[in-house]
Image (cartoon, rainbow, N blue to C red; front, side):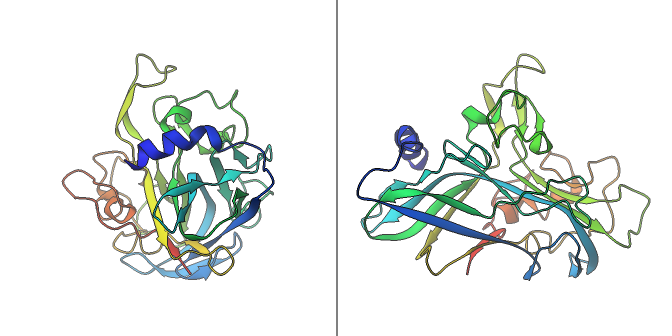
Length: 279
């Protein structure tokens, strides 16, 4: 039902503000284990073995943001179309600034959604971590910003990395890949060819977030991967698999992680997502 509501509202998301509309800013904060994220910092005590890590990337796509009215209905936020971070109802949150460990990043950052809603009383917020299916499987070289961010794109079949948080343990136990990467995106997407958009994906892997009581004037949305990787050994990597957990089936490093992103994985049922919280 939620998807149907969002689809019905989609045409209203990029319209100009009118008299009676009010501006709204939704602030986000990136943290690692409850501490503010910075590319130049290292963080101790992460994962099952208390690893020390640097963080070389921290970017997240969000979409379909809407405020909750008192009657429970949804009022989509018409995002400002800024030509860089927000397009349609999709926004890229970018917390890295190309300093410190983030040498492959970009200098610009974006940590808040901005837009308008009709004046009124609202009691909460909903949004999706991810890119809607219709926009997820496009050619990033032709897509408008921020969907032209190739560092956040896998391929035509999988589409975009909805979450890219790259952890780099400072004291690995094995000779595997240097990093332990948390990448969330759609997997097992069937398509006629490598450059054709799929008709469906077996694992969509989008996170639906609802924050009752959220007030943009008082609250901040916190993104912190520490609870997600709490039972993962960040100093090692399962043999012959991608570094860390990249959402693909058959990766032992994902067994304790995906449920904490609210996604079922192999024979592990979905749990309560632990990546997003409200403060």
